[in-house]
Amino acid sequence: MRMDETLVEFRGKDWGAPKDRLKGKEWSWGMQPVVPDYIKKERGVMFQVGSVFIPVTDLGKAKEWYIKHLGVKEIDSWEGGVGLFFPQGSVQLGLIEVDKPQPTEFNVKKNQKNVYFNFVTADIHSAYKELNEAGVLTSDMEDFGGMKCFDFYDPDQNTFSVVDEDPHSPFHKENVKKQQAGFLK
Image (cartoon, rainbow, N blue to C red; front, side, top):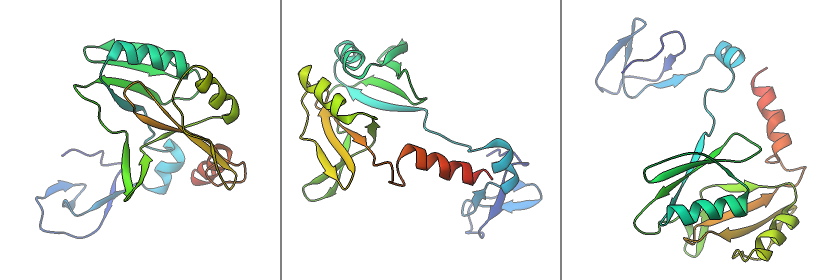
């Protein structure tokens, strides 16, 4: 395993795993890489979400549906997949053709499920109205103390949530930006 010696310090203890030499220190699988403070300041965050992949059973039909209903644009395609981008933001969508539908949500409790990711919007009422008027199956809109949300379903019955966070919520994008700015100070 190669690691950039100037970027990584280690903490932890030897758990008896296979060892390599790194910057004069014994390295083991039980150690955790730590990003030093000077790296955080100079280089910013090291990771961000690049793409979210969605299983679909008919790639052509799904591509057209996502373009029509979510306003995404095609980046490029390959055998069995297509990359899409939103006019705003940096996260991309990848549609991957599969043989049979696969879940885009997981079980939290007996009869409660949660999606793996959600879409945010500044005008949830317009988004809800547009999807319904276009014939897209949606759930009822719910309000959880200021955060409004609803689910919608693509042609494969993949479930997605749309949320509009309360401006006072720590999860609202502007409040997250403040937290990120504080991280880099």
